[in-house]
Length: 246
Image 1 (cartoon, rainbow, N blue to C red):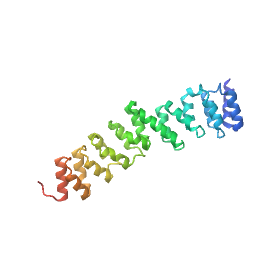
Image 2: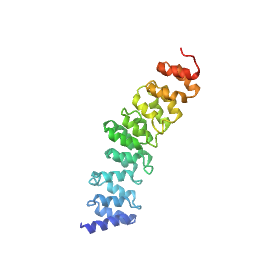
Image 3: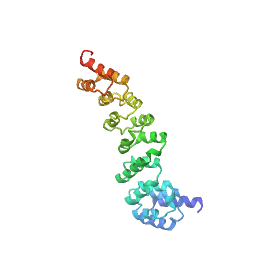
Image 4: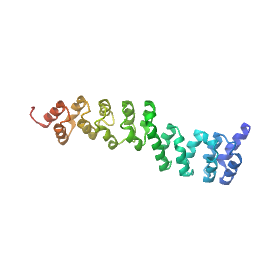
């Protein structure tokens, strides 16, 4: 087709009613290009029958943009949408996993795909995911060994204190990561976070000694009695409790 003809068809695909749209797709599906298909997918009168016509055209499924649009479309049969999810790029999976307009089971499939791929992604890619990750992905990313990934995760608005606690209580957490949490503008001021940091033997004693004076007596007593913690930390907790130095 000439350029003007393509533009005309694209407009008709976007603006026609359900019956006309189906007829257009039946007639032109073998020759449609990506922009035209995407116009059809934006048509509010697109039916499941029309979508299945597109799904059955294998040539069109070679284009990542079309696969993503089909996965996200509410009229794509859920089974077929989920079948396409593994073929998407990680950036598309990330967008789908946090898009509340996408059906929950499809979002969950995107989450699962990302979780399976996390270990092969670069630090920069994991950082990009961490900044926007869904709650399901946060559960995996919170144990990432790279402080840069945790730093990005701490800025994620979906991160909650409850989802952060397993990291703060882990005996495998890196001291530099715990220090990062302690100094974070959002998390370092939370009492629950401070208390958990003081109870973790992996937290730098320098950090803990700076936090102990802010703890309640019950939490200070727990620190004082915890023999996993350093002598300096326990002695300081005892002093704050009024115990005589031993």
